[in-house]
Length: 423
Image (cartoon, rainbow, N blue to C red; front, side):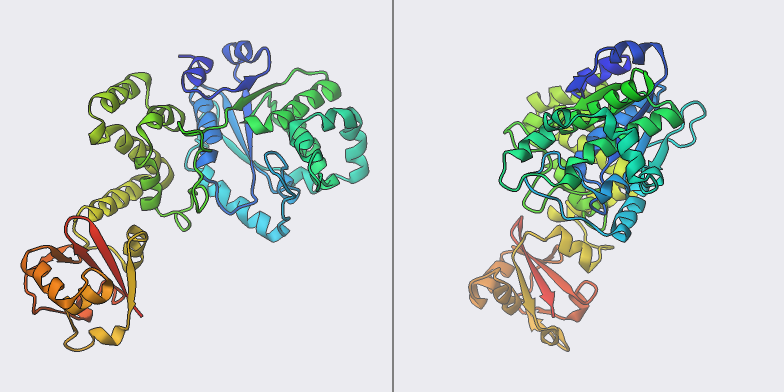
């Protein structure tokens, strides 16, 4: 497939300006995507534009990722119902450095013909004077043009409206495109479908200010088969930062993808080819209980973000849920793995010396209704301490059994876990 055929097959194109296909088929383009530094980490939704840049580079085009410490000082109003809380310059710059490290996992900066670049738009946006900006950029846009853009129009009908600060955002993004066009010959900007108005503003600015043709392409809003916005959960979208979303939690996000979504996500978020994905698509139909496609999706995406060591850790952690060996896991890792199971705080002194009887601990943790029930469960072979079967109803639990001296994991039956946190 050529790049357009591949992007269409993967479901990665929502809109494109006329002539994009001819341009990408006849010349090597320089392509850019901007990333918002209003958080310290990118999230799984950002993988759509990231993979777009990866695919462009693999097809011989030159990718530019903008870590927007300049535009980040204003905040993009697209897709928002209210005004964004502004961050300090120090917070923005710190976020940009973290995002640069994350982008470096995906792009090849040493390619001989088309090396990737990561550029900070603060290099020009924080230096341009307001009067110069209004003369050189603002004069090319009417207020009517800006009001017609969805990112502004949707806010104008709300009581709080839109501030002049956020109203000006599209001009800053348009100026980014102009600078990249002038400095690097950039002739294609890509972004989410909610960015379409801002991206077209850059296309228009290049045409009006330079008389050159530039192009735009947008990705669709990714949703689940049920219509929910991709990646969203009670705690928000999983991030690419292992300190915020552990490799295990990241892996679990992908392995829990619904059968109805897994094939489309393989197309969007991996580099697996059509033949490989067709095999997994068949497995979803013929042997869905094996979740072969989900496991491949989880392993592939986790490796891209966290490396092979992250995949190994995540897979071992997943095995722990099914009774696997806990050796080598820290207390913090186990608390992450078992974050959703019932837990009980127990005084650390309870485990000092000879410790506490196993039946008493089971009862205190809520794994048994009484000491008598706990003893019967132990004698029946249905109780596990740190995933090791316990058979002695007279046994005790001491600090030697506590992982890192902080946690004890109890299990009743095959999958009923209970966490004991020592405090």
